Amino acid sequence: MATSAQLSRRSFTQLVGLGAGAALLPVQARGLEERMALRAGAWLEPAKLLPKDPQNLILLNSNENPYGPSPAAREAMIEAHSVACRYPDYHADLIHEKVAAYHGVTPDMVEVTCGSTEVLKVCAMAFLAPGKRLVVADPTFEAMARYAQLAGAEVVKVPCDAAWRHDLEAMAKAAQERPGLVYLCNPNNPTGTLVSRAAIEKFLARMPAESVALVDEAYFHFADDPGYGTLLGSVKAGAKVVVARTFSKIYGMAGLRLGYAVARRDLIERMRPHQVSESWNVMACAAALASLEDKEFVERNRRLNRDARAALAAAMRRRGRGFISSETNFVCVHVGGPVRPVINAFRERGISVGRPFARLDEHIRVSLGTPEEMEKFVAAFDGIVARA
Ligand SMILES: Cc1ncc(COP(=O)(O)O)c(C=O)c1O
Image (cartoon, rainbow, N blue to C red; front, top):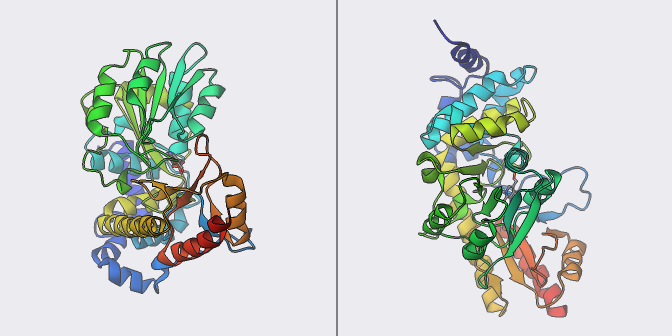
């Protein structure tokens, strides 16, 4: 007899046509170029801006993918319209299983969340409390410290080293007291730097037994450094590590809100009660299921990002401007003075760059956009930074 999970999956497959031989397959079977042509070139255009944005700003501020979701994800969302009236149980079954299979773990080692931000919050609630400590790099993605404070934990910020990387030695020392959670954002936002997998593995070996490490791999796909690697191997080997991933970056789904955690079963069990129940949505699940299949799309985005990163680096070198070498889809550029007036000046020219960040007093964080957007950024930069 079929289990309820199997029945769920079958029903969903029939409903949205994501199963074998269903409507999506012909779309995915086509080459990416052809699918893009089918969509009348929409994929390579920057996403249309929101109606609330009358200035039609160029958005280089939130490390989004400027090209939008994959053609297969768009098709899948169109197919999924008819099931938007249903709660997402079926979809959740499917996406948990798909993510688990994708990473070679069991579904009970996966928790799918409302963006990977929810992983951060759930980890704070599950592993922190008054008397416990969160150890983070400084600067790093700021949401983690906010959630730790909400959980009543002490937040210890360990300055990045001279190359703007996590100072793992100092973080390991800080993690010995009042052990709770260590947050390793790798590659790191806002610096764009990374630490090697081997260095993190060494770090993990020094952690107190009570401690949990949360490794945020939001920018995993953009890293080219040969020493870089996911910590999923450590999860599979039984380490107390939660790996967080998101569909917001390489998959171009920031507005859809889907992320996930992969961890040991017992850690997932401790996290799950803190999640808003059914915090997924059917559109996001359908798009994510299609996106995971679309390896060509991922490769193309990586290449476009790598090209944009190299072009920006070359433009800054030509101008004698320093920048932090990046392994992500954003770059911190040295502007030689306080950042606030520079950010405001870009805004006046219709370009939104990242907000000010702790310790980066003279760097603006620029997300990588399309070639046209980056040309406009560089043209504006010449006017603004020459004056600054
Ligand atoms: C390092 C890092 N983690 C997590 C997130 C949250 O992403 P989301 O909630 O969209 O998955 C971001 C967003 O920019 C980020 O930079």
